Length: 283
Image 1 (cartoon, rainbow, N blue to C red):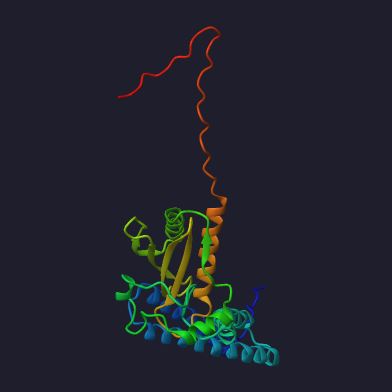
Image 2 (image 1 turned 45 degrees about the horizontal axis):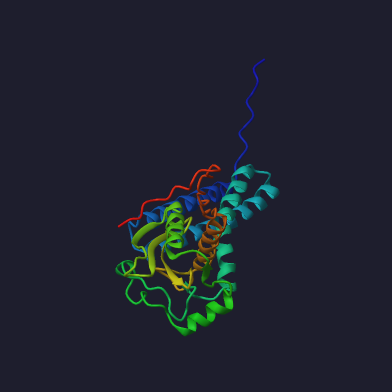
């Protein structure tokens, strides 16, 4: 006797659309990240594209909850699609939500330095920064920085300026920052300067960095400035970058072996009864 196939279980159309919206939101977000990192378009259209992806993710979450209700009441299929939409939507909104909490807690500044009275200056990288964002903002931003980041201070080292400069340059190279200019300390120019461009992990925003190493007595003082090219709020990225690099410089210098002085050579002992040999006088 032939078996009759069971009819296919109807799938909730709301569940289908929730998964489609979530996948579309992920695709739009990926495209916006590619646009920002590659620099194909201006920053504003790229951010608008990412904002649209967040809107679609929110709509997908609403559709997923609506699908749960329909599936519960009507017994239709599509639970997996609804769960997929909920997971993708929440995953896409999680990081922006985290950044939003940081923006609420931290001051709206985008230029941080260890020396607010005489901040390191951008020379070569000044040509890459937007107009009006080359000089340090001023006392108002300095006051906000001291309140929010009191630990962002210069690094004092008990090593010569050249050693501190080499350690800083090695760490910048290890981080794979784009190095715009290097000016090592010399007899004519006592300060060492490094200008580099760092990028944020996900979106790849470009932040400009300048490191200044100044001789202080027998040691050196390391000052650093990190400034975003766009936006009025860095979400704490510049202060975190300064803390990380200065901490690594201090660790590298502290863990370096101290140079050992060579022992003095002693003259070979003379035998008893033999006169000590004298070197002829130089004329």
